[in-house]
Amino acid sequence: MKIAVCVSHVPDTATKIVIGSDNKSIDPSGVTYIVNPYDEFAIEEALKTKEKLGGETVVISVGKDANKETLRKALAMGIDNAVLLKDDNDRDSIGIAKALAEEIKNQAAELVFFGKQSVDYDNSIIGQLTAELLGYNCVSVVVDLKIDGNKITAEREIEGGREVVETSLPAIITAQKGLNEPRYASLKGIMASKKKVIEEKAAAASDKVVEVLRMKKPPMKQPGRILGTDKTAVAELVRLLKEEAKVI
Amino acid sequence: MANKILVFLEQRSGLIKKSSFETAKAAKKIASQLNYDLEAITIGSEINDIESTGKYGVKKITFFKDEKLANYSSSAYAQIVADFAKQIDADILFFSNSSMGKDLAPFVSIKIGAGILMDCISLEVSGNDIIATRPVFAGKALIESKINSQKKVFTLRPNVFNIGEVQDEKAAVEVKSVDNLDLRSKVTEIKKSEGKLDVAEAEIIVSGGRGLKGPENFHLVEELASVLGAAVGASRAAVDAGWRPHSEQVGQTGKTVSPNLYVAVGISGAIQHLAGMSSSKYIVAINKDKDAPIFSIADYGIAGDIFEVLPALTEEIKKVKS
Ligand SMILES: Cc1cc2nc3c(=O)[nH]c(=O)nc-3n(C[C@H](O)[C@H](O)[C@H](O)COP(=O)(O)OP(=O)(O)OC[C@H]3O[C@@H](n4cnc5c(N)ncnc54)[C@H](O)[C@@H]3O)c2cc1C
Ligand SMILES: Nc1ncnc2c1ncn2[C@@H]1O[C@H](COP(=O)(O)O)[C@@H](O)[C@H]1O
Image (cartoon, rainbow over all chains, first blue to last red; front, side, top):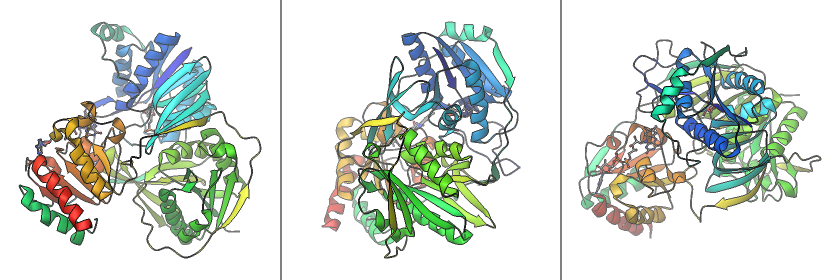
């Protein structure tokens, strides 16, 4: 079976976000980029699935040359091939999904893993959008996955529990933390990945429908009061919660 | 005929969820400002008291009813909502950004050719546009955007849009059956975490971190949560140590929450933790290190020892509540 993984290349979660001079995007200077944390679960699940069922794996990313770093990391973890769908302009989610859908079709991948969310723009939708464009089944926010022939049984996280979903291939699965423990790239993997060629193609054209007007900092919360250093402060705390904040 | 807005009302176990009422109320406000008509759709098997959604400004609800639709089916629900939206020619659709809404909205948006904006925390009408604000980079920045296609889909973050005043009105409910259910994906079972309130839905959260020292001390957090009617949350350090399940993790790679009250116990306030909870309305921190970053966003803090302060706090609240 051909298995694909889609990955995004995002600012490190510890990065301080500075708004760029266009007031529409972040200032990229000094920002370190990493593999989107949820995509590591997606990569791991693709590798595990290949180990169990055989086949071939390919990792795909839409974006700039810099995304090659993340593709390289996936190769080092053990993914067979990598494709960069190049676009130097920022796209909206549907634009990314269209480019991915086209490449997944090209690759004839029947099973595709995504992260549940990209920790940059926090949309949580590209997996679902891509599935709908392809007419594939889709289960999002998956914490447990079983594949038996054509049949898929997946557990997805919901408020206060899990839903067990039954569906079938071809399918897209979006990975939530808990699905697996991503492996570290071995030295051998890292060496091998350096020799691999990342295939480059232009991303399929797409019009933007979502227009960004402005990026801004959230209103700063004023630091509050430290009421004391031991249990004698408890009475005052409860009074404030009751009378000032009115939350209890 | 006026243009239409359609709001999706989510039911679980036959009850419409509170976040759907918030969404309905927000949709109603937009409908009045744009001079659009508002309708609602709900899907399930048995649903109690749908009419009362009238309180939030919805006059007409279409209920697609089938035994097989009691649980969520992404394929069937998406088909039904998209077909209905096309049938009534709705231009704008609203969903709650709940786990069901997050899954469903993107499928529908592709089916009806709509642009989509997720997890909005405020909506502003400007001329004919809806300017939506959404948090990005885990709340470290906000982005204002608009959708330029004619059809538009928005999902709204739960617990942010105020329900405010309600009217004493009932909605007209039309029940419809569905032919040719598309059940390619279906939920066959729901595994509930035993009687637990989920952090994503709670109005009060008490979260514990590494400062608790071990899983055996989390009963202190649970006891405070219990007297407050709160959900229990955790930092990633507590989750990674195996003290708490991942479903309780708050933060950038856990859940994003905005309760009325968030109590952080033995949590330092790393940027990834703050990202998930900084939009809480009130924040209380208990941490023995007075320089811990959590105090920089807490409204009230006690810079003391958990093992002394927490039991006293639980007792004091018990007293006040009785
Ligand atoms: C990619 C990535 C994603 C991440 N995502 C998340 C996330 O989603 N959520 C998250 O929470 N973190 C996340 N983190 C981890 C984050 O950086 C911190 O490591 C984590 O939040 C620390 O947890 P903590 O506050 O419980 O522990 P610590 O930072 O160790 O803090 C413990 C605190 O307890 C206090 N304390 C100790 N003993 C006592 C006592 N007896 N009484 C009172 N106070 C006491 C200490 O003063 C200290 O401030 C992420 C990190 C990365 C790299
Ligand atoms: N530029 C991209 N290229 C390839 N995959 C992406 C890209 N952006 C997002 N994804 C995938 O879509 C998932 C969800 O992203 P999002 O909907 O943006 O939160 C991510 O976890 C990735 O698996």
